[in-house]
Length: 130
Image (cartoon, rainbow, N blue to C red; front, side, top):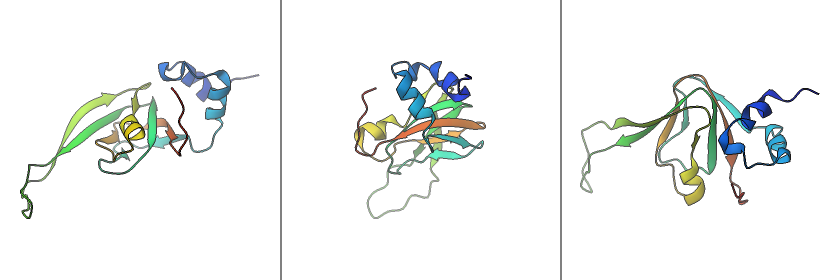
């Protein structure tokens, strides 16, 4: 019997090494777990609420942070915010974990640097010890 190519791929990623064969198989066969993104597409946006952890399967991700000059309350800044690249992530990298753990809004942006596939796990009140 031929193995699922996605299953073969995730078995090579360090993140999934602690998962049992049954857990990996269930994950691969669950609808909506794997998403494809076009180059430049936003995967997560700073300030959004979110409770999904992402694993880069193919392609690359650019993690950015918006900068705004401090402005006194009641005043408006005339400066445009800048996007600073914090990191570039390749296959096997994880992102989005801060919001998953802290239940706070996203503190960075994640954009596809190239056509990219990611696996993600949403948190709906169930904790899985990784």
